[in-house]
Length: 162
Image (cartoon, rainbow, N blue to C red; front, side, top):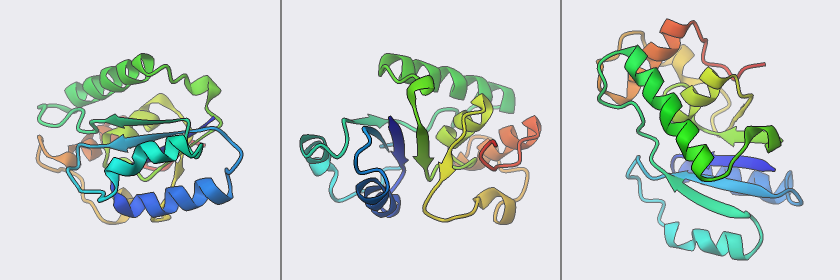
């Protein structure tokens, strides 16, 4: 099975093109992050992609795990607990996942989760990781960018694990 995850509409174009070309015959699950509050403009049509057989399931989730906490340790713990629980409740077992495609790098809780768990993923849409070139160390705690502090504290470099 293939696991796709989208954060915003810009990612959707890449994901649907990839699924319909490179992964046409493979079963796939789509995770949609509703926490960004960005209007996809087509969210009411997600069920149609299941009915058409493009995705076996579309699952909405809240990607803001860890926001507002005070320390990188608290954030890391919350991210791990939140996503472990989410995947358990949705019967998603990473041992059955052939590939993960996401635009969630280490400035998004899903990307942090994958990196902390050592789960290999393909970073799609932009082709490079934000954190290396655009974001400095030391974001204010309680902001979305605090995930960078977790990553830096753990010594992770922001790339998908080998």
